[in-house]
Length: 215
Image 1 (cartoon, rainbow, N blue to C red):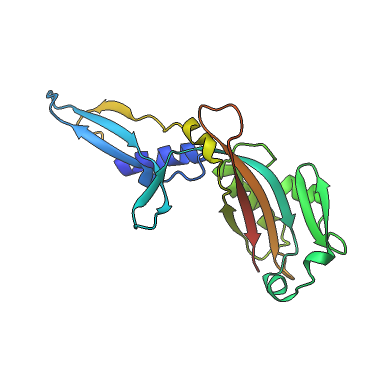
Image 2: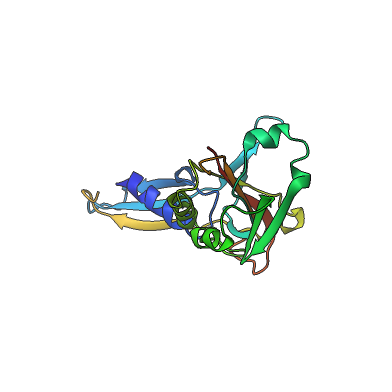
């Protein structure tokens, strides 16, 4: 029951901008001193682990809301060519279409309108894991790609905005006992995202969202 609740909360938050949130951020404190066969259960939301410092100590940060910034799509990305061809970048062009930066060589093999329909992400949209999953499914449904992998990159936030971040609150609730890539190559798309604190009305940090489809 508690694990299912952790999954539900995590899914809810990741569909509302909390890109870094995971079930490991949630813990439960149970108080049975109240009697009457009731348990006072507190749901505690912890900070997320960003890494470790030079002393090997955990570095924690508040949970934050992210927004998408730029979306760059490379439909015919080939990782082998990207690693070995030093002149590839100089041969690429970019076509902007309704929030998408479509990167191509010579000419696009997919119509921009087709890609726009398959990618339900737009600049300045709050990160939504369900929409990211939908983008993956819709891209694969085009029949042009062999496989896809979605990954994210995060840009550093300005140090002077650190005080604007606000942790998610804990919640207390009583419960009773018993409640218990293309077929001929690969595809790559990138997008940057900026994150916003729960309290601040302005953007206070930026990150990058990168989607990579491999053959």
